[in-house]
Amino acid sequence: MKLKVLVVDDELPAREEIKYLLEKYDDIEIIYEANNGIIAFDLIQKFEPDIIFLDINMPKISGIELADKIINTNNIKTPLIVFITAYDEYAIKAFELNAIDYLLKPIGENRLEKTLKKIKKNLKLNDKKMQQNIDTIVNQLQNKKQSDSIKLTLYKDGAFYPISTKNIIFSTVEDKNTVIITTKGKFIYHDSLSHLERNINKNNFFRSHRSFVINVDYIEKIEPWFNNTYNVKLKGYNENIPVSRGQVKQFKSIMNLI
Image (cartoon, rainbow, N blue to C red; front, top):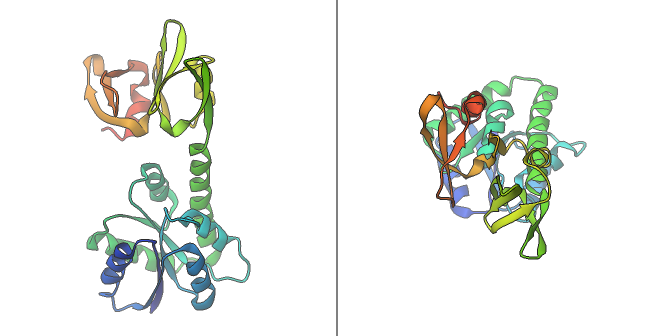
């Protein structure tokens, strides 16, 4: 079976890299390319590619938005989508569970070969199952995008500041006040740590200890400590943060610790 492929990435070197790797396969009939989502959508309607290698982070129309548009447009053949990402760990975890596949830049030949094998297997599935699979990916990525945009209004030096939760490193208690350490400094939160937990994205934040809520995206180092507990070093913060014994099991699961 000959496959038509569309490569979508706003960076020319990234497109050239994927094209170079794909051209080695005899079952790739033709490779289209686009540097933005608008051109890509037009090519999809015109040429009906079987596969799209789609970068997530592009200007104007992101890969997430393009995938959503494809799925929700009537009278269009839905291609298999392989998302490409350079950094987003939580998107990667979502892809591993639900996606047709993902590729992490820079792309390796062996990894691409596994992707193509998976694609050929998935091509045998019916269109309805494929659509459900892509819908799940898009929904998860949209939920993450929405959670990243959550803002808290925090107090500092006589004024209030809207701070995105993705900029929060951790939160703790000092002198009976809940304080939040962010990439923009230290702020006061108006309520308890438990209240904070309920108002932030739990996929990113973890209650490591009764006195700490940490953003796992900022974990730089994990050190074993006594009684089978751990200390955590966060980016941009010098002091160790404890993981209490009661939280170790959940922490190991989140961080894939053996």
